[in-house]
Amino acid sequence: MNLWTLIAATIAGCYAFKLGGYLLPARWLEHARVRRAVELLPVALLAALVVVEAVAEGHHIHLDGPRLAGVGVAAIAIWRRAPFLAIVILAGLTAALLRLAS
Amino acid sequence: MNVTEIRPDAAARRAVVRNCLGVGVAVGAYGFAFGAASVSAGLSVIQTCLLSLFAFTGGTQFAVVGVVAGGGSMAAALGSGLLLGSRNALYAMRLSPLLQVRGVRRLVAALFTIDESTAMAIGQREPELGRVAFWWTAGSVFVGWNLTTLLGAVGASTLGDPTTLGLDAVVPAAFLALLAPRLRDGTVERRVALGGAVIALVLIPFTPAGVPVLAATGALVLAATVRPRP
Image 1: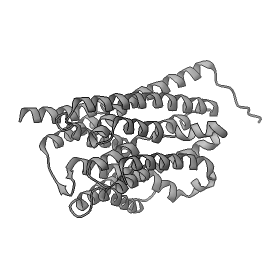
Image 2 (image 1 turned 135 degrees about the horizontal axis):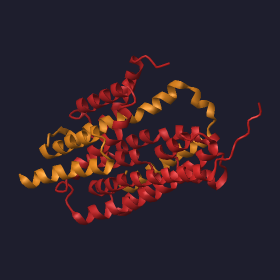
Image 3 (image 1 turned 45 degrees about the horizontal axis):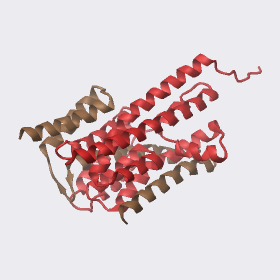
Image 4 (image 1 turned 135 degrees about the vertical axis):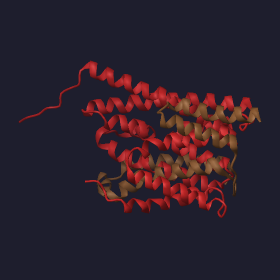
C-alpha cells in the first residue's frame, strides 16, 4: 500500500461510516454495549497515540528530553484549560527552544 | 394538552449561529497542527488537504499521519484511523431523525457528521434550532479546518525540519488535548485511557509500529470493571 492508497482508503472508509449511520435503522443504537464501546474507542486509541508519539522511535522506546518537556508543558496547559492553539504552540516552542539551547 | 412546535424566534437563531461560528474558529486551530504534522510525516500538501476536505474528521486524520510518522505500516495507519472514525456512524444514527435529509443533502450531511456538529445539534432545545446548529457548525468548521490545514501544511513544508520546530512534540500534545475532555467524563474513561496507554507502552519494543495503538483497544474490557451509572 502506498500513501495515495492509504489516503483514498481513509477517505472512503470514513465516509462509509458517516453515510452508513444515516442508512442504518436507528434501533441499532439501542444496544447499550455497542454504543458504549464506540464511545470509548477514541479514549483508548488517543491515550495510546499520546504514549507512542511521545516515546516511540519505530521499535524502540526513545526518551527525547525536549520532546518530553514539550508534552509536559502541554499537559500543564491542558490542566489550566488553555485553548488548543496555546497548548500546541507551547509544546512546539518548548521543544524547539530546548534544542536551540543545547 | 395539544402542544405544537413553536418556531424559535430570530434572536434565538442568531445566538445559535454565533455560537456555531465560534466553534468553527476554535476548531480551525487544530487545522494548523494537523497540516504541519501531516507534511512532516511525509504527506504532500495536496494529500494533506484531500484528507481534510473529504475524510473531514480530525482524530482519524491525526491518527493516520501519526502512525505514518512513527514508521508504522499503511495498514496499521488505516486501521487506527478507521477505528477512530467509526464513532461518526453513531453520530449519524442520532442525527438522522433530527435532520430528516434525503438525496444530495444527505450526502453532504454525512460528510459534515463530526464531533462538533453533532454536539451542537443535539444540545439545542428545539429541533429547528438543532438543524440550524448542525449546518452552521459543520459549515464553519469545514471552512476553518480546511483553510488552516492548507496554511499549516504550506507553512511546515517551507519551514523545513520538523524536529527543529518542535513539531514532534506538537503531535502528542495535540492527542493529549483531544483526550483530556473525555478524561473529565468519568472513571470508566480514565481507566480505559490508562489501560490503553499501558498496553501501547508495553508493546512498543515487541510489535511493528502502529500495532501498539490498535492493540490498545483491548483496554475497552476495563469498561466492564466499572459499575455503570444509573
